[in-house]
Image (cartoon, rainbow, N blue to C red; front, side, top):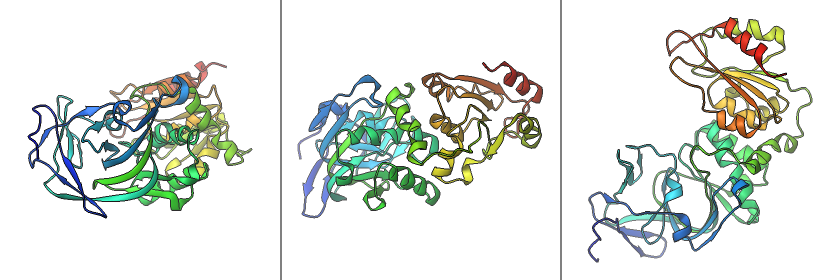
Length: 350
């Protein structure tokens, strides 16, 4: 095996029939990170409003866990590392505190190999409902512009049962049968051919095309004519301690409490499909405002010391209005100032 270059991580793959073995240095080394456009077999640039930075096609690409991809030549796909925090581990990979990546694969590590054509949707944090809805699911529609989804398997991360069902139900709206979903764990796995719709850049606005995909979901479910126009998002783990008093204020104003944590994907989409005003603690349930009509207004209830800007990009993309109302008291078990909440409601644009 040739000596590694000083600033690059190298490994060599050996094909022994039904699997591959990676022969590497047993110590951790700096990893080579390159954009997908430079190392993919082919790359399609997409319009700025497409919801992704492009669509890459790979031959013999390795999924290393948490969405990270490595080419057969040993280079990490830069876009696949989005969202991984410094100090976080990802199978044999680790992002150091200075932002650089290091990698380590034990010598002669056998790797599973899957034959066929795949659409790769794994991404760090995709087990969070809000992240799945806003960042990952619209990429299915991007892939569908280039691929016949019925001919591809969809690669996702393994999830707990409740979230797994949400993934299945949401993909079914795009004609993806459960049998074509492949859930991978952290162990390295080779994919024979993979289409990779790139994720949007971290912090970027939800694109117009992605919003159109999300706003079309109620129609795919035949809508819900009795869905409330004023929604309070209940059930958040870090929601306000005085929720009962809060509802005493909101119910006479026409608000209906909705607890996404106990609902199916279809129930969540229908519940928010006609919302004009949404109030709730900052959490994944508020991501459902993406399926509400344009112009939906939101009041985000935040813990002391937080800003409540997590959903501002989404609201801006929907041409809507957001107010962040900071709670009072301890961060754990904070309360909402009811008079301040009423003032926020009164100040919302007509």
